[in-house]
Image 1 (cartoon, rainbow, N blue to C red):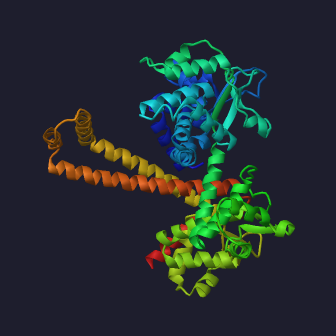
Image 2 (tube, rainbow, N blue to C red; image 1 turned 180 degrees about the horizontal axis):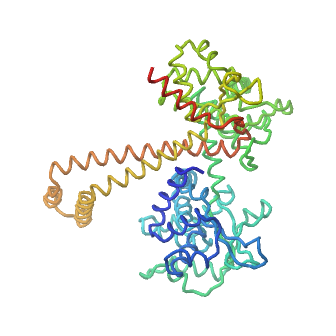
Image 3 (cartoon, rainbow, N blue to C red; image 1 turned 45 degrees about the vertical axis):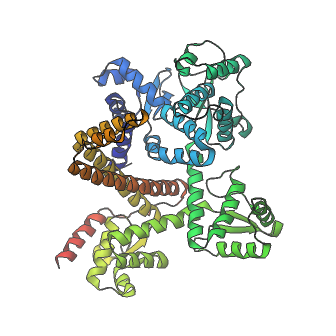
Length: 548
């Protein structure tokens, strides 16, 4: 992990956990590694109660991991910071948006509550979501506890929610239950008394919040030891599938995208990180006909052949049963999508000539500096500048082949090669840095115009209150005139800047997710450098080339 990873992780933590104690505890654990509670209290100048409260909050969100000290026979608990899980905060908005698209407003609130609270019991979650729906002005007849429970069941059956239980042997530590698929998607049955209590609280018209009354009751609901959390890997798989469908839609047409969607939908019940299970042509045709997509078998076969001939070759025929069986190779698919991002990055950063050199190296393998100059048809000075710049940036790797064991430069051949894994690492580091800069820029602009934003919010609140009270248009216009024309113009510019930042963050989040998924699935490794100091030499050569 680089400094940009860590910086972005703590920027995200600052948004989700405003208190400085959580950030300070996590930062200390990130520097020192796993530590017991006693050492945290001793080293940090923070009251023990505040540290315990922060550890509990972060542990519920899996940002802090708890495990027994394996080095000693004692049963003391060590606390460790999970940086990878912290970066998942970046994808919260995408997960909520997916739940809204698939399961409506009920599903959106279920996922949002779990993301905000980490882990919850189903009975508590039903009451909380119902209360939020009523506050939002939704019809209680349509959005009842029963309908919320049905949405919860759909999320669990699709494996968007993960079942958690309390391990009896380790008090205060929650661990994921390793059970069969049927048990993982099994919904606990709420007791009859508990369900009656929930329904009565639904019909209760008192002003006391339902969640407060729910916590004060001592009824047994039947799910006291079963908790639920968001299954991020399932959401990431869904987003990966959508990217793949969109890529084929843009590259071929809408029918090709629907065929790929059908193959992925048939295999989503048995997810695999590397490839789908084999699906026959007959199953694809039958499913598409059931979904109402009218396409004869000859045309479908032509489309599948066209998809198989795609440059990424991610849809592969693996058998002849059922008129042919097909799989989707996710590693090849992610590799093709990742290459497109790297090529776009190189074009914007170094220009089209650098992209030509990169594509040539990817096609030819490894080439020397002289070969690159001749084959790319670029003069020596520019070719050296492009090659050294991409090498310093991590997009190219250097292989050294020496005639002797001393690696004397006069008797050593130097070859440049494209390594996609190293390029993805470099691009991901740039993406993390850019995301952190965007977040800090957004915060800077907000603090810089704090007074104007507060004034605008107060004016909007007064106007909203007048319209609810059926106020006259003259009164509303008088309130609107509180803001001068110059302030209104400044607010419009500020809103436009915030929209640009938000759009950039949204696009960058998609890129980061794609790069992270490629790294998690890729088996390639960076070439071993036989001699250190290559980047320093390249930087000196680049300076010499520019000075010429």
